[in-house]
Image 1 (tube, rainbow, N blue to C red):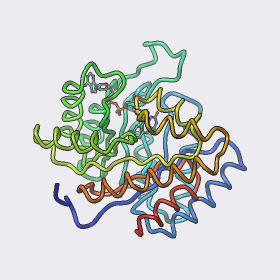
Image 2: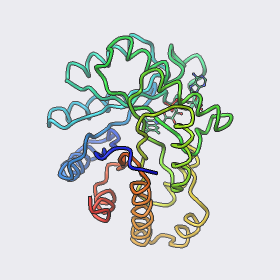
Image 3: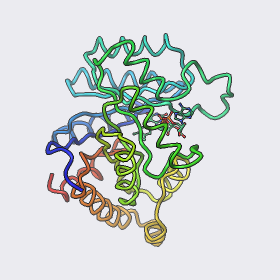
Length: 282
Ligand code: FAD
């Protein structure tokens, strides 16, 4: 595979902290990672929950620091007017990059809470209808197939719909099998989806947390990796060391194979991402 673009895009994802202490830690993380010169920081957003204000507060702070920010915006559980209100606010802050998602409803919210937009393609359409090309829109991609999808081909068809609705580029769910990514990109090109597809990279720091999280989002931890990580037990240093070696190798293979950049799921920690970054010599 050839390099798709000479200018690779590197970005870092944050989640909105719950506490003041968490906010301070995130601020330190941002200042450390900002020194690496990423294209932007993105901030996650919880669908239909009380966490939304925390996203706005985090985005406000990043903007006040003049840091290029791409808020995530999910549509499930929201009405069009609510989405437009949020987009107006972002536009007033000169934000012009978004990660547009369907999101997942918090458990316990029934179908009545779905709102007016039930899939990400409708959100992308709404943003394009209302703002033309003002926003650069990223959407989510799933090299190992979205957990609710009936099969890979149908999932790909829905992914293409998001792209046709006007997405500029995509960020993938994390994965540890580079072949899943390369095959997904090949499948996209086969159906004439040509946008850049940036791999989402999850550093490995805590095996139990990662295993729980992966079950929910359909990301596979390959058996060889799971067994190795399990073998380290409570030895967090060993997990981190082994994890950064594995993830560095993954990133190398992705970049060598033509990935247009990397999007790091930082989990608001600077060190794991920084280590991989240094290993890669970026
Ligand atoms: P969609 O693209 O709408 O797809 C969801 C499912 O529906 C898939 O199975 C798909 O095959 C199917 N589908 C798609 N379109 C249609 C259609 N038109 N008709 C019928 N079926 C369809 N979650 C959060 O809550 N907050 C975040 O900040 C967040 N950030 C994320 C960032 C990235 C990079 C990624 C990869 C995921 C993120 N998620 C986040 C998780 C995401 O919200 C969930 O994976 C969610 O279940 C799907 O969102 P989506 O935008 O991919 O949905």
